[in-house]
Every structure is written in C-alpha cells, then in structure tokens.
Image 1: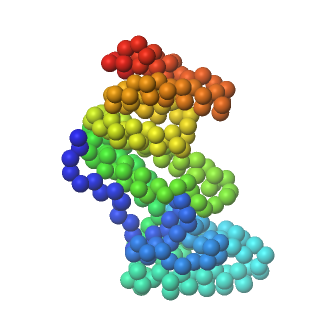
Image 2: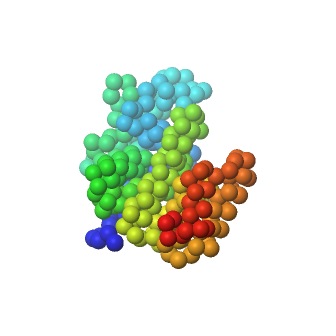
Image 3: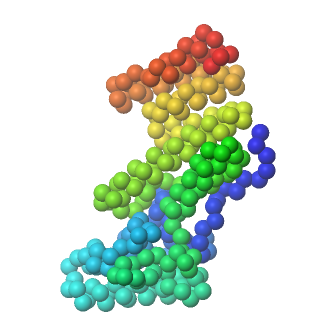
Amino acid sequence: MLQGPLRTVPRTGAVTVCLLGDFRVLKHGVAVALRQGGKGEQLLGRLALRSPDGVPREALLACLWPDSEGGLAGQSLNTLVYSLHRLLGDALAGRPPVLLRGGRYFLNSGAGVTVDVEAFDVAAQAGDRLASIGDRHGALVSYRGALALYAGDLAFGSDIVALVERERLRSRHLTIMSRLADTYFATAEYDRALDCALDLLADDPCREDAHRMAMRCLVRLGFRSQALRQYGICREALAMEFDAVPERATEALYELVRLDPARA
C-alpha cells in the first residue's frame, strides 16, 4: 500500500485556458464568462492550442476576420486583445494575458497564464520519469494529477492540427491509465488496479492490455469466473470492432485462468 497524501490536481496559473473536456477560461480557479464561439474564445483557444510557439498575426486576422479589410481586421484584433486585458489583467497584477512579439501572438506564461494541456503533459512526463527510476509513489502522484486534468478529449479546433493533437492527448490519457493500473497492481492494490483497467476499457473496449489487467486482478480478488467472462468480453469486442481474435498473450492468460489460476 502506498502511503502519504496524494495531490490530485497540479498547480495551475492565475489564469488558465482549458481545452480539455470543455473550453473554459479560469481566473483564480473560477470560470470567466466568455461568449461561446466568440472572438475572445477563438483567440485564446488558438493561442492555447499552439502554445508556446504562438500564432502569426496574419494567421489570426485571416481566421478571425476572413472577410474584413486588413486595416479594419487589425484594429479589431487590437481591440480584442485589449478587452481580454481588461477582463483578465487583474489576476495577472495588471500584466496583459496576450503578448505580441516578432509578429506573433503568445499567451503571457511569464505573467501566470497556463494551459491545461501543457499542465497535463508536464504531469504525465513527470510520472514517466519517476516510474523510470523506481519511484512508484511519485509516479502515482503525477499520473493521478494528469488524470485529474484530463476532463475529456480536446474540445477546441477542427483543423488537422487539432485532430492530430486530440488523438495524441487521448492516446496519452489511455496510456497513463494503463501505467496507473500497473503501478497499483505492483503494490497489490488489486481493487484500484481493476478500477483503472475498467475505466480504460470504458474509453477503449478493445485495449487487450486492459482486459488482461482486469483478468489478473479479478483472479487475485477471488473472482475467477468473472476473469473468464472478461476474456469473453474481450473476444467479442475485438470481433465486433475489427473482426479480429485476441493476441497470444491474452489467449495464454485465459488458459492459465482456466487451468491454473494461481499462476495467472
């Protein structure tokens, strides 16, 4: 059993742009009212999605005001940036949330503007690093922090960049759940490992590693018949989704559960 308190939510900034689950802007943890789909949301969302690289001014003008003459669009962008400063600057000691440098716009991370996607990646990377040096407790804290930030799939953007990023983050989320299950299993916390495996399967019913984890946990918890049924669920899911059969590792585990559960 791992000991000690577990911090579940990594620290974020005075202003946080959230792209996971639903688009939100938080000021000291409280949601700020922005018109859904409005220019403010579009600007902050695009800057957050491309953080920390920023977005060229011309790209923002073309996206936000595609039918406007250049000068008018530029004035509108300046007004929008100023309005966001008025809305969020008090949380940043008067500093602007959006900066213009070298023809590109950036979120002002130095003033305390953060992005939930970046915080998720930082927590996930910390978990991987700690796991690699054998610090299970530290890895557990970091992985749980990452999962706490993952409120859902990427909720902003519809272009190819957003599509690729959405799939990357979703895959990372599922991998973290798998590694969390492995960590719990290694410390004989089979109930928690089983919960992680089942949560993973709720998102991706065809993840065979999660089916195998569930089977091993169920055997150790004394539910051999349920472990055998879990194999059947795995087989059915693969057949329905891909017209495929389970991997050899899954078949081998099934045979162990069926014939020699003490070795499963």
